Length: 294
Ligand SMILES: Cc1cc2nc3c(=O)[nH]c(=O)nc-3n(C[C@H](O)[C@H](O)[C@H](O)COP(=O)(O)OP(=O)(O)OC[C@H]3O[C@@H](n4cnc5c(N)ncnc54)[C@H](O)[C@@H]3O)c2cc1C
Image (cartoon, rainbow, N blue to C red):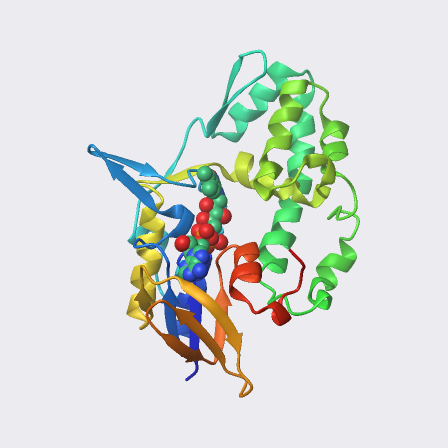
């Protein structure tokens, strides 16, 4: 059994902790806040509860896949409600467009905004679904150790359909002319933190997630997801230390890693830093171990 440290208890740190513990490792989580959950934590005041970060639960199959490894389903922890409308969009002219959860209603809305757009949406989504099947169900679960992982029968045979090298912005405009529809179709990729013109058309898989699968909400708020992951982690022996931020990471000559907090110094066999990259790189790693300059 190896001892693996995890910096941060956001959804990424928690999922890593649970999976490592399931695979027989001793896992110790360090969280600088006094609450677990990172950007998915909650804030309560005057009888109201606020989600501090996410409010769109997309790709429920990704969550289900996680729970299934532990013999659970999301419904063991919270009720997942499909929102209808999924969301609404307010255009620059102040017009409100409600995005229906039902596929037939969505097609009708597109047709109402632009003649012929319903058929275009069907064609767009066929491609988007293919990209979702290959991209989300196959590629993202690779360990990420080599670029060769991305080269397999699906990616070779589908290299043109996956549209890794063409622009998302141009892709959308090939299907739709109306500004409202273009804005609606372009917005999901903003979640990736990039502009549509700089994003590969592969990411129309996000439209499939948001418009075809739909937008969900875990009743009780996103902290329900965190509570579920913490419960699962604890059931597998993960140790949590809150209000204990990591101050420094050092690689030792015996191939161990030492990690320092205000309370102690601990030696580990492995470490996952799930806090923001810039913070870990420039504040926690020693100068010689950094990949980038400031
Ligand atoms: C306002 C907002 C809205 C969002 N909306 C959505 C949405 O609708 N749908 C969606 O899917 N995503 C949404 N996101 C994105 C989503 O919340 C994040 O991608 C996700 O929560 C990030 O999880 P993480 O584990 O990678 O990082 P984080 O949640 O940031 O976790 C990192 C943890 O590391 C801790 N930490 C940092 N430094 C140290 C240290 N030195 N020592 C110990 N601990 C440390 C932090 O306190 C934190 O708890 C939203 C984000 C925000 C901010």
